[in-house]
Length: 562
Image 1 (cartoon, rainbow, N blue to C red):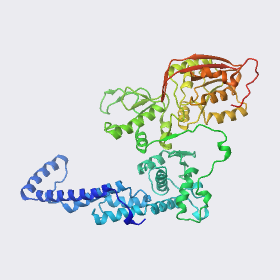
Image 2 (image 1 turned 30 degrees about the horizontal axis):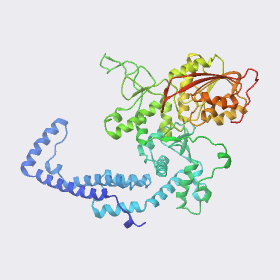
Image 3 (image 1 turned 120 degrees about the vertical axis):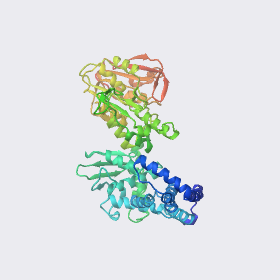
Image 4 (image 1 turned 45 degrees about the horizontal axis):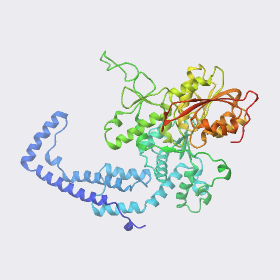
């Protein structure tokens, strides 16, 4: 597409008119202030201000220099125009910074129609070529092998020589560019340099993989400064497709087209789990959050006055005042509400010590860090995440009749509400095992000190059954949607020891469905109907607590096909 065919947003032309009007007003104001009488009056005010702030005074001629002020005006207008058109978004970081430097130093071209329109049209008409150059530069920067010797392109693992914690220079800059391109492909907001700096800084140098940007990328860092990077297959082929526009004969078609699912992958239908992406602005708010003091402290070194802390709970998170200032603004209020909802999702309770202060019954820092890195939060509906209330959890724990030394399993453990209730019955929780499909929820469970395996329970139970793993007690609140509760219950029954006991929180409609569950025939079943309660996104749900024990004359529980 030629630059003449590119249409610019009407706002760009409005900026040109606005700039000319402001320049006319500035010129008129400068002429007025340079008049002898006004210049004298300005000098008096300048002296007064200089005395207050210990600054040098300036004359009216120096202050109202139209030529110098015009350069600053043009820099502001260029910044607005580039933001409106997103003209720089397709550039590599180095070129983008060079243009931004010109704006910061007020060395950019004059903001006139003769300069602005052709420049913006040129950038927009060449955006696909610039994107291809950016992707090519990313691959060249992150891969020691030339593309002609790496037909898999972004499908290969890349080794980065040195990643600094406090800079986006070198390979870290390529990671930032890669995050930007991935955001464009996924139609997400473009991450800022500060966002990439913060992400890289938070990844520890422990040799473990950390997933970022909705699992599109994973990175592991080492003490000596090297790092490995792997692009998710669903993203790698799309990057290869862009890369192939620069090197059409280097990447075979199979590496730049979406891989087909194997028949075996679709042989068993599973619920579609969705992870909701978190806006970068919300991630930044969470990044700025920190714990507040939880013990009394002196107001200053020179004072004997002790200040009472806002909370006595060491496990707390408080949003930064720099983010909460101006919370009444519509957009800011939305972002703050999103950040607060995420903290509630992982078990945070609003504190009486402040509107944006949350308390936890575990150390939340590792979990918040996991959320910041991954950039996602489990969608409550698709994951069927329905936190169990304390009243139902305590009753279920009582009905479990668990004793010290017994092995306990909680499938689909969420953030551990049911397991938390077992602490009233067990001093040693080492025999308790959790299974949870969400990595975020698993991080919560690990922070609470529980043994957890991050896996889909249906798949995990199949492996556990084949390994002849049995549990003395099973407590569960399975997903309710469709027949998921039945599938989870049947799988759990197969893992129960012969003299075991299973307690499940189920929808009240399950009472009528039990007679149709073939696997439950011969089992002793009790129903304890509960009053309607709220479960996360699901409100006023009628539930029943089911207590099940296997038939006495059966030596073992044999798994039956669902």
